[in-house]
Length: 294
Image (cartoon, rainbow, N blue to C red):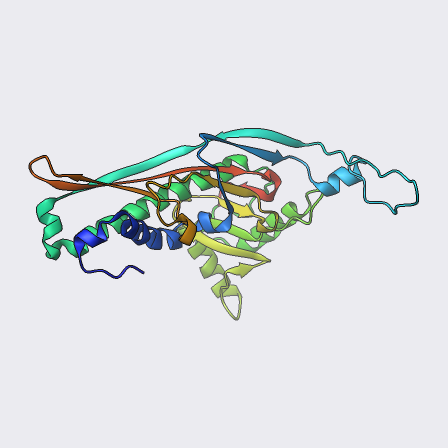
């Protein structure tokens, strides 16, 4: 937590980065869920998409199980298919805020300027979250179902049946022991689920339903996004430029901040520029399902 009462001190790059990262981290649900990899400044990243799995490879006789080694015996050679090499493009997003020299000198503006920085962090997290959800939805290849009674609303009595059928279809995929560990729906759909379980269960609604943690998110207007987090199905990639990022090693922050003091112009001002360079990719499409209509 940042503790300072001076606006000029608040607007140092390290303090801005800390202020924004403290607010961004709790709101960026997708960032904490998946592995993050430093892309070392490259403008693209390589990743492998797994269209098969180890169990299927074994069942099809492609991937051998290990054998007991006898004297002078040869080891079976491992061969793998169904893993596709891909290249993703890094994205750079950002914006800037400008404060007059008079505003910076007058400490009555502290809360307003601090709130501006926090809003910038929230807007950054919202964009990153939305991009991650879009990629997950586009890449999802696990099977879907026919809904029992359409969209989840206060009149829907098939919500639990939908979750049961969706989980069974997910688990029925050949290969790994697939399991929807996390599911995301719109806030309205979550409220409908809460009302349904409050009505039919003695102990009411619990977010843990049929081995799945159910949550509502603003980024979805409809549908259900289900993920098997046991398989680490996606990954973040980011670039760090030390001249504009001071806290990566200490906090893992990937935010870049540049302060420009415009002293030779009238009116004088302080410009704060903020940006993130990132990529996001799904590695295990079968570990992701998107059910439309909910």
